[in-house]
Image (cartoon, rainbow, N blue to C red; front, side, top):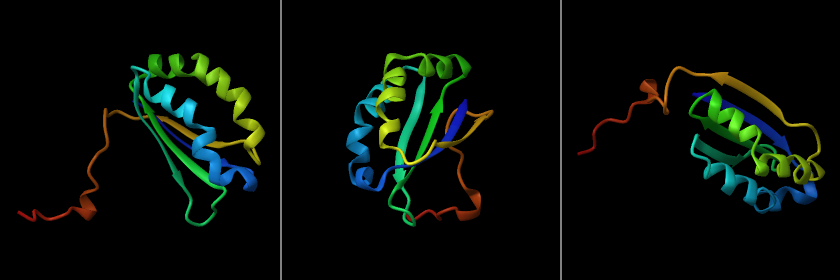
Length: 110
């Protein structure tokens, strides 16, 4: 899978509305057949920073995402709300889903 994490520093005046601003892009990306997940989180240290964690099935799905109409639209509509160019980590991972964090395994409570 292609695993991507990106940090978006949003203009302070738009920070509370970012989920609404990115809603169409988020919804349409999640509907892509090759999207495994597309999840936003807000930093607890900087309320103007959002972290996007996303994954796509394979390179073909990643290319389809970048070439999609909603990605092209987001390239026009999202940057006016950003304080800086987003930062990204993009890797190919030899798995299809999240792995368990064994070092923090939760004991069976049953």
